[in-house]
Length: 213
Length: 123
Image (tube, rainbow over all chains, first blue to last red; front, side):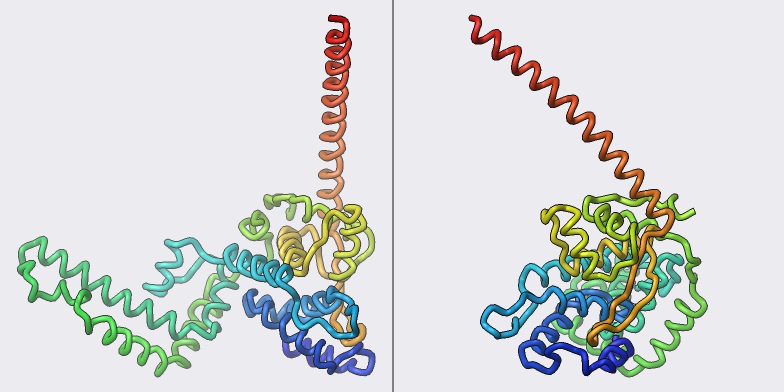
């Protein structure tokens, strides 16, 4: 959105009431609620959507500019933004394979993957999925060992680890620390694998996006 | 072929498509046009407008045609594609046929109602 915004601000002389405190508050409110949309959508459409919201601003009766876009408009943005996120989100099975085993998604989720990798919460998502994967693997392996009689099902054995009080804090601290420490290289590697060398979509209509509400 | 994608033609999407079937319009002009087309019954917000535009563009029924900065505000213009105009005509025809069937059904109902009324008054 910043590039567009710079272009828009270039036409400052004709901009009505720009700089007035009320309009600034209104614009801040509009920008805040537009964050319901994915970043890529905001880069593409953020400034035109902001212009529409400014056009839709009610005319002040008493000379005071409106302070925010209002509950109805905010709810409309939240609903539409999350509907778009939901339409673009891969189904649970594909998402689990991507998140836990780092498998490539089909081409129609290429944009979603790009958003996910460059998302602000990406290191946190990686950390939680790594912690879950470690715990899940450990539970499955331990359960199989108990089932096969290799180890006892007694309280002292390893399969009970995730139910101890210190396990989750320890695993999460390790996972989050590792994800933060290698955040830059993780993003570069994921970008290469899933975006540059990923399943790049060809320019055809997207059935899931068009069929949504 | 872009029309092969299934598109759920809601009333709002139909009105947006109709608004863009003439000249290219920017977002706020689409909102005003939809309000006029629906005789004030449909008032789109920015979220609803862009939800529908996103779906229409993804289906190949609408395309962006250009942009300009007016009074410091970015205006991006959209217009219906040939497929979009065809889809609008098809939906208009469907609605016209529905209205005709509804009119016939209502007139039959009115005829029965009048006959019942006559029978009732004769009893």
